Image 1 (tube, rainbow, N blue to C red):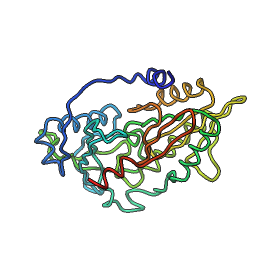
Image 2 (image 1 turned 90 degrees about the vertical axis):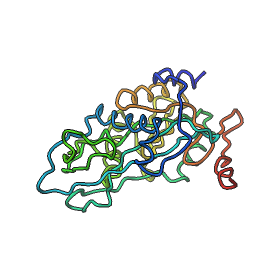
Image 3 (image 1 turned 135 degrees about the vertical axis):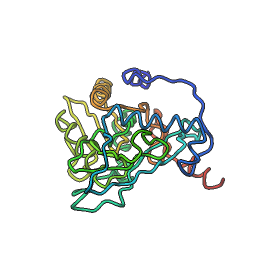
Image 4 (image 1 turned 45 degrees about the horizontal axis):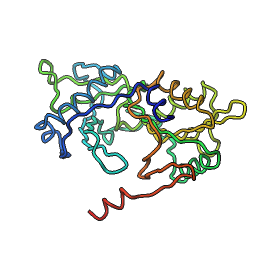
Length: 278
């Protein structure tokens, strides 16, 4: 089964865990719930693994950017809750262009591009897969000096007035999306992918008679190929460079529920419609 083999390549395991049904409005509420505390700890552990920052005395000059916790209950294509996700973001609106950052623009796939991608899959009769790059922005080295405040609920008791100097990009920073896009693009081009001329979020790899097509939307990626070997090749390429948190057959992307079958691909907004009538 193609879906199983791709998951095996990624080393994805399934396990039962408890989740909180309540989505906290702020850190104060989250810190009263053990499930959300664990989610916050998981987020900060990623910072440690990726060597995102270092705690230092507050510099005499330089803008110290605030941080904020964002909480979201993740759901599957049927609306069933799958996990609690806590994300620490920088309050990038306090940054000053030319001082805290320079370039910010990064291409983002349009919904029309996704429709075209799925049309190609129908025409060439291949299965589409999806993957999510875990904490994508945390992979990107910052070229500017940036400092952020310690996150609420997790201040160092010995150095409560210290700040973090960022080594890597953080969600919320103005320059973070561009840094990630450039890193991923450079990696794919090094691996002999060709980038789309009009749609610069589309990449393709051809070998003999086979095609591997890839569409990126920030840290969410959909892909498919006429060759199972190329699918496995792409999964291995990505797993060797980045940490993946999801991989499997495409079923839900940008609000679209996707049902793949022998007779084609069916798209619908069932989940969205249910939410509207709640």
